[in-house]
Length: 340
Figure 1 (cartoon, rainbow, N blue to C red):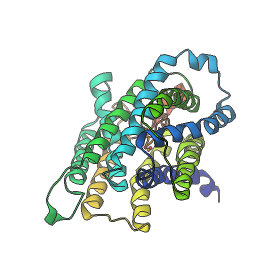
Figure 2: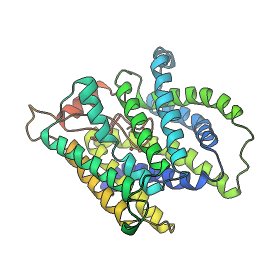
Figure 3: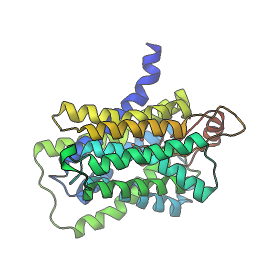
Figure 4: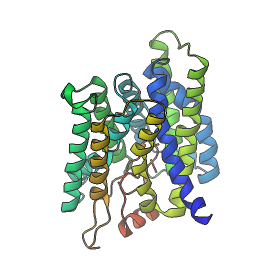
């Protein structure tokens, strides 16, 4: 029972983030990407305010002192990443979205090495290469069977762009000192300010079915609020490194849910996804020699879900000194958004 209480939060967080891909792929028929993104963050904002107050007792004045960085983060993560993701789901599949998003730890590692001068072990380089190979396999062959040959959909290209946007989000988050959920809340608020005028310019509001409203409510409550709460509970209980391991469940859960709902999953998606997971493991596993630590890059599957993880999925960034110490001790990567 004790183990269940410890491991249930990170598992449920990944499960909830996986449903964002599943519901997003279905809701894009009833909402435009701008509508879905705006309504998601507008609905999640009051929930995140409550969670931030409960867990972090925010100093809003101190958080606002970094407003320029929070605005940039909002544009890269909540606006950029989320808009690209939902637009991609119009022509790509939820499984492709999860597999391609799972490569973000590799792209974050590359960016951190190039831009921040951080180090990566040789086995980490092999892992990055494997991750890229796995994603290329999914992008080039994942849309059909072997007889159909290789093809690239617009949606897959948008997914790659969303990963790059998320990578920039995580790299920039290193400059922030605001606590994670407070930072996420501020960035969501700024995103709503940016998105509402854009929503007014895009035309008539959506007229979704009851199922569409239910799906939107689900995305607001579970992937956008509860997942962040559970992820931060897990990070506090298990530590950043152990919590980050659970990020590998994101494409697994997405595939299982997709199959359960009758979606077609190809052999290329399965094989490519497995290659990506192996690559991510190699790229982010703790080093054997303490003197040569691996690169620690943040990033979860969702904006705001970082701060933890040895690999955003959430989000989901501005680590605290305790997080840094834990990372040096063990290993981290998909962590700033506390993994889309």
